[in-house]
Length: 232
Image (cartoon, rainbow, N blue to C red; front, side):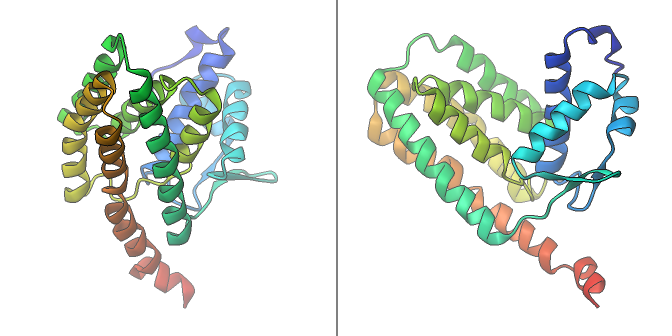
């Protein structure tokens, strides 16, 4: 990653850069469970001071993605199939409510949302998995926020941030990424039209169609030969 020293005075921005980088590595599976993040090592890699790195890792530890380990750093935690299922159930419940609320209010001035949706499409075209995670998150955060309930937005995004996107780069995962491009545009159109039933149905499918992909990939990981050999 490019050296970030030039932005050093903006500690909050640097923290956010680190947070996005580490979170995308974890949820995409690039940083597998058991991976250790060292504050000094990560700060050196990014070319910044340790303060924003420590702040970002502490914030991520509150979501349960990582756990502080004394004198070592922060360890990426494992997730279970039950936890994954629960996250999907709660995400679908909250985001469905947010979308029906948004449709009831009638979305106006959707230019920003279209720009964010186009950014997601660009990452899919470039087959940039990490970029897709960040762009997709930005789109959904902006969309949910339009429902006008900051607490709901925070809860929904916290659930998204705690979900591991295993299988994102699989054939099925890439197909879902492709499908999400048009679905994002449809969500905007349905919100503008005030179609509560249509947007509720679409957001449920938009979320839950990922569940079998993530579940299959996580199940392979939990029962794979590497894990079985470690248990012997």
